[in-house]
Image (cartoon, rainbow, N blue to C red; front, side, top):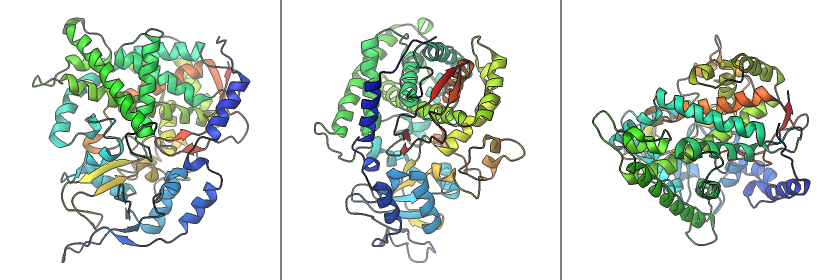
Length: 498
């Protein structure tokens, strides 16, 4: 059993840092300000007048407050504010900003047009103003034929046979950390940072080939660089000057480029037959059916993006699932019963697929708190969206997390109810694009299955060892929606040994 403990002074200092961290949603009175702003009418703006005779409507909206725009409303509770816009303004509206003017596209019908992209009107260029400098030429930022070319090669790293090897590594790391490193019988235990460290350790092992406990200093430096780079895209001050977040993100990106370039050179030296099973080594030796391979620079860019995508989304999903299970003892026991039938032996894909209740809890958790709240696009030609005129070069942002709260699709959408995904209800099938936590169309998340297997592995090992409890009755974390949703207090959970 773990001997880890929590220092009271360090806990109190950490909570104070979280409470007083400079952020829009931390300033006193922000909730009252957000409610007042919702009822404020700003100067109406028109994106562009439709061509005569087109029968299209113009996209209208406003710019919100000077400089800040609608950042206060968005950061306080993104899905709820977007639901308010959907009810009061409709599914397509203009959000003017001198920095990033964009069309806000909300609801499943808008998502269907954007994700399906039948006429190839929407490119991934919309991501570049936000995260382009930090995740340039990652798979998600590539378009059309080039994206397909890269995706076909990368798919070799996510075959079922490869995933089976990754699961073994995930289980080895997760089992050790859950058993030995996490604090038990203490309601001050902060789940989110512990999970973030665990998913980074898993990514270091699975993606980079670092054995747990080895290269500690290097792995820590690389993981810290990932954390800085991931948050840099949310910077308000976007200038490469110290000590601002944007500058620190660019500096962290350079460190990651140097690290992965060295690892690629090292992996290339090994013959294909002696290559390791980590994802980086697989990418170094993978080819599509025509024999096309990645360049060294391609692999560096893809690894930086994959590491970010893998550990942040898994951390968000696992933390939300654990919170929901702690608050729902009946579902916790139902999931534990299935885990008990698997026992403590080594895990494989076939075993994890038997954890059906855990999969229901996962779907419901990412419905309620969707890790990736938006999908950014840019039009490559004049087009239309739900009868509205969208000119070439317009940034368009879809928000799948809002669709996950629509009462037209989901019964009592604010209630935790995993059974909504079972027969005969199948609420997720009421609209083809009503449930899109992994995106859709050509850009649907290539690592979706890996992420699901990783999270199931972590939860299985937890449920076999501990009863999950809230720190006190009625506890609910406040979410920071500045990027991927993060519990502002670190999410306190008590782990009670079984």
